[in-house]
Image (cartoon, rainbow, N blue to C red; front, side, top):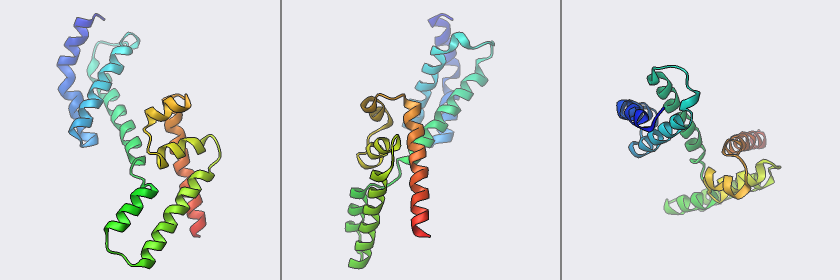
Length: 167
């Protein structure tokens, strides 16, 4: 497919792809980014596509990109020790509640640092140092999907460790 033909496909489906992304992520700017990623992915794989109706193919790519984003964004909502301490100090709490919260934050931090490889480095960089997946990929020289999988599994391991500690 020539570049001009692909530009016509982009013009024809850009609003649809944006709408799909926006409906899933509910963030205008992120939907714009995901729309660009969708068309970039489509462009790089256009030769492998067999068919003449690009609409369902582009919608599937867009929804997969949005779902991947939502999965990674979900992990970013985990509070780090500093954020927890800032939140605690900004609200009026008793000294006992403050001590319990700080102990909990330290416990979680220690559990992150106790993880075995390949999750130790990834979890430390992601949860404690707040590095993005792309930064971790560059630092550890690992594929992006590998890093995403390791973050996901590290989170599951931490949840399991914490649940066992509470029972």
